[in-house]
Length: 127
Image (cartoon, rainbow, N blue to C red; front, side, top):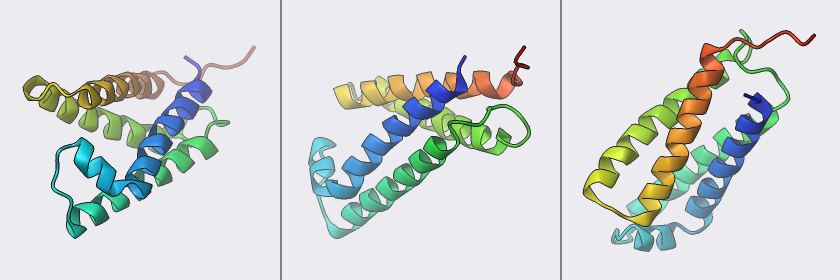
């Protein structure tokens, strides 16, 4: 599995979510059927900032080989994020069949499995 493709696609995935949450927090509230207030707005904007920050980390590390000792913390952080988030989204999808939750849970599951694979397999030597 090419780590560059995984890092670039996860970066774009997180950047889109982060940008939407940062610049459209009230609209995000209404899509999720949450009554907009100042607390939910600021929480969504802060969450968007976290997503954008993680996207920048992944984008900047896309040229490095994942799974080695230097990129292991980045790989483990992504794995934990996507694993925990994916499990929470899958649990929520079982009770609330919203199309957005289904799309997010599929994306989180794919990236969780991808980072698990990168973490478990050390980089191969290029011949």
